[in-house]
Image (cartoon, rainbow, N blue to C red; front, top):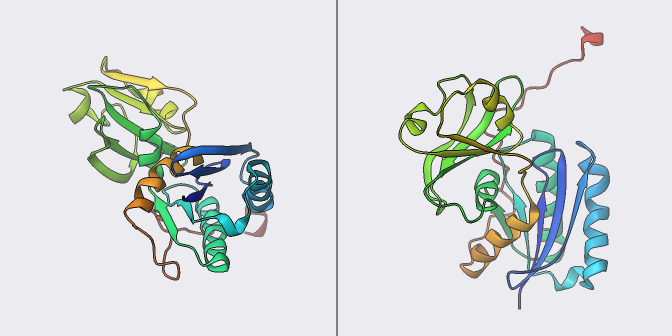
Length: 225
């Protein structure tokens, strides 16, 4: 039997989930903006208690590896790596956008386009087939009315995620469809992680880093300039 703890901190919504042999035991979702550092460890502790699972029973820890918030990804990764080191268990990473696409169920003949907000008119995005094959690789994109025209002029595309509202405001194409309130979810991270666990597809804990997609650039507050 394998028990996997999954951590999702790529966006303002933080979630943790437990799976036993791919079956969901429990999940906690917290929407408090980017306060992951103050709530993540307590959420994990509470989830384990609710499920009647001890830390020593964990078989692996899975983490959403990005793209997403630099700070959120860093906190999730450091927490996951710390647990893996302390418990001597493997680390599994899951692409955030792929997990979002997997969360869209019972969709046939539509391309899937998850979008994460990257400020202004920019998003982190990728395009997947219904069976989660990559059609367009992960990239940052500045949106305009012509974005994704190479796909939209040929077939229907479903857009979702906290960056998709930006595109909904500028696109005018009958093949563009939008689903609201779709966000990265530790439950889906855990489902994908179970597949990787079965194939022993683990990360090197010492060298693993989140997929930030763009370099982090610190800026001074205006009051300091």
